[in-house]
Image (cartoon, rainbow, N blue to C red; front, side):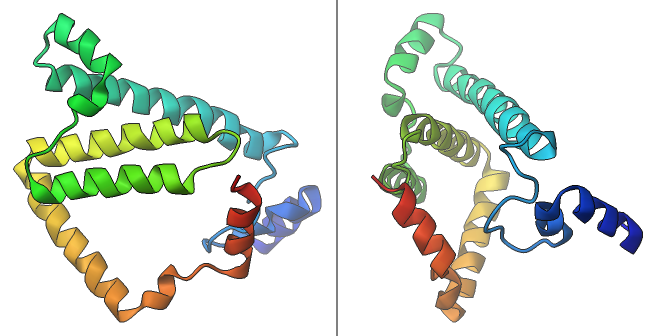
Length: 172
C-alpha cells in the first residue's frame, strides 16, 4: 500500500490505522459496528463462515467416530463427550485441559455459543491427531517447541493492561 493509499484510508476511517500493522489488536482494524469490512469480518467471516465450517467439520468427525452408523451418529450428537474420548494420555490431557479452560475463560453474555465453537474446534483437532499419525507426531514436536519457547519467555503469557481490562469487563 502506498503512502497516498494509507492517507486516503485513514481519512475515510481513522480507526483503520490498526490495519496498517500486524501487531495484536486492542480495538478493531475495521470497526465492526459501523458496517464495511469490520461488519463483514464480524458477521460474515466469524459468525457465518467459520461457524458453519466448524459445525460441518465437527459433524463429519462425529460421523467418522460413529463408524458411519446412523443410529450411533444420532446418539453421539446427544452425548458427544462419550464419543470424543482418547486413549492416548497426551490427547486425553489436551481434551480435558482445553475444555475446562474454555468453560473457565469464556463467560461473557454469549458464552454458550462461543464455548460450543471452541469445543467443536477442540474435537476436530484432537480427532485429526488421534486418527492420523502424521499430524500427531508433528503436533507433539510443535507442543515441545512451544513449551521450550515459553520456558525461555514466560513473560509472553502475561496479560497487558488492556487485555486484563478486557477480561475483567467481560467476565460475569
